[in-house]
Amino acid sequence: QVQFVESGGGLVQPGGSLRLSCAASGSIFRIYIMGWYRQAPGKQRELVATVTSDGNKNYVDSVKGRFTISKDIAKNTVYLQMNSLKPENTAVYYCNWLVIIGTTDRPLGSWGQGTQVTVTS
Image (cartoon, rainbow, N blue to C red; front, top):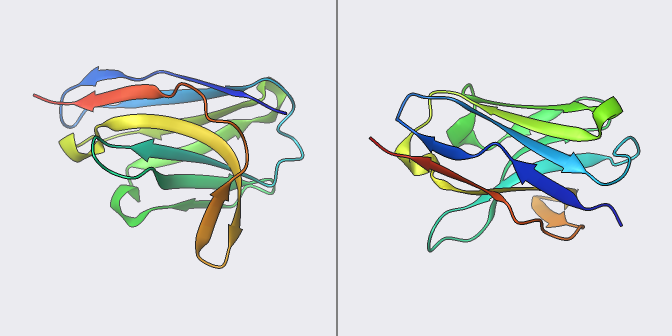
């Protein structure tokens, strides 16, 4: 089973940027949907952004226009470029592959350790 290792998090001021990386242990070429999730303290893990095998991208409303998901098939890596960061974006960010059934997402892989993003002045 493909495993994921997230990196790129850190401490940033409001308005700053970070680029997260998700390195897969195997090929992501045939994975239909890859996604970035986040879990803020005291909250449930939520799906933030997805990219399909044919390049379609979707985002949760709160990050539209600020976050961009992308992937590099040759490197088996998925990225999340985060701009104009806000304190409410503080969370541990994870990647996974998933399916979407109706309006419900179902992550299918094992969770990595995630990468901490902290936005504070």
